[in-house]
Length: 83
Image 1 (cartoon, one colour):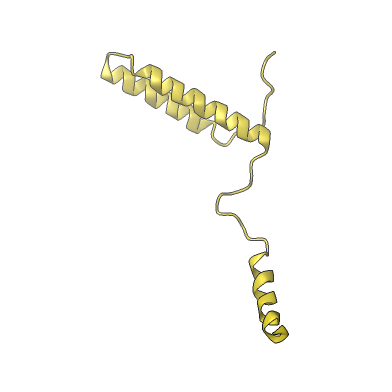
Image 2 (cartoon, rainbow, N blue to C red):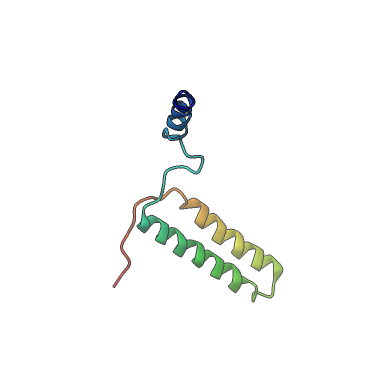
């Protein structure tokens, strides 16, 4: 029975080696909270644009909001909120 246990050790060590994540680096708690706030803010903007009567103006407003979010996508420095 002990002879069968030896091959499994190699599989176990292989399964626990550090692999590169497909999701990218893990976010800190502060980054996660800030990201959540930004997405919530973006969704609220989209919800409020439904009230704009003119379809062209509504589309332009949504495009502007999305472009601004995308433009700042790579920002990683956190600024503490105002008191």
